[in-house]
Image (cartoon, rainbow over all chains, first blue to last red; front, side, top):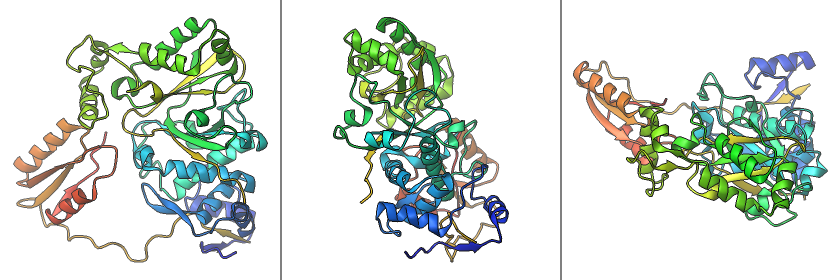
Amino acid sequence: MHLISERIAVDDYEDAMELVFARGWTDGLPVVLPTARRVEALIAHVGRDAQESLGPVPPRGGEATIEKLAINAVMGGCRPEHFPVVLAAMEALLDPAHNLNGVSQTTHMCVPLVIVNGPIARELGFNSRDGVFGNGYRANAAVGRGVRLALWNLGGAVPWDTDKATLSHPGEYAFCIAEEEEDNPWLPLHVERGCAPGSDAVTVFACEGPHSVFCYGTPEEMLHVLTDSLCALGNNNIHVLGQTLVTLNPLNAEEFARRGWTKQDVRQYLWEHARRPLAEVRACGVIHDQFRRMERDAGRYPLRYDLDNPTTRVPVTPRPEDIHIVVAGGRSYFAAVLPGWGGFGGFAVTRPVRRAR
Amino acid sequence: MEILSPVWPAPAVAPARKRRPRGLQGATIALVDDNLDIPFTTHLEELLSTRFGVRVRRLVKPSGTAPSPKDLIEDAGAGADAAVVGIGL
């Protein structure tokens, strides 16, 4: 296999690791050393031309060639079988609809979350249950970090340079979950988004870290607390719409389904009730109002909401389908909301996982 | 042992740059309004004009969170001595 990346000779493991830090090739954590043997194994697994490019990675514009993505995936801890999932995530991130250029450079704290669906999630050991946003699972960690390192090394999304996040969040190291599909009464996310049942897919959505929602009881009680959590005044969504993500645990979903609520019923209810009067929203300040008007001028804020009437009840997304619902986590008392960036971008994009040939 | 570089190589030849203007007095500056902090941008426009004698060409991006359209970049490059870009929040 012919690889064209620069090769750097080093005396030993310690020197190699220090070189990786000295050249700024890592995010602050150690990496798996990208030797040619490891990188070739990933490329061979997917059977694609090493120099095929998925496109330039914004903001710096390094080409996402299969070779460069494999190097970064190795550094993140990926085995060959993880690499198709990394490639699907990168294809989704590079879709213009996601606006990765803005996501990587905004002062907001959103980070693209990678959501894995389909049989491949179970086969590769992705966690979709207890502690789903946390640590402990190689597949979540390696795919999540492989993607992040590609954005770091090819996109140049580096905090002292182009990444202007005011606070950011720990998902900058790795932010990858799988949806729980077995203990789930509803259609999985990727099927809702047009993929065939039983297929493998990745969805990316740029969002804040998970906000805990103490969510237990009847559907009406769970919806009461979820609606309040979704429309907090600190979230971008209540000001400039966009998309948001609700993560229900399997017990929540089971309770909804047992009482006859479909996922669409839940979504519709949340969209209709997670609202605030404009007077409360405008009390946050002039700049929020300015953003809202910019979004309206850009055609991303529906004109049906009268922004001059303080009694107008504004929603958190322009349409019900912009509230994404994923089932994941343990069977317990907690759900989560993960607000998005607002109408500026970071929107959900789904891509199929192309299995190894 | 050998390891492979994870970064995309920098271009061998740096892109051409305009010569920096000798001063602001009488210079034409393209002020690219990111459509985000409009009062700040307006204040900057006034300062450049009244305090430094700059001829300001204000160009407005359709969205402050996506790259400028190609024609806006070309307009800023061709019609001004320098440009102010990246006014974010």
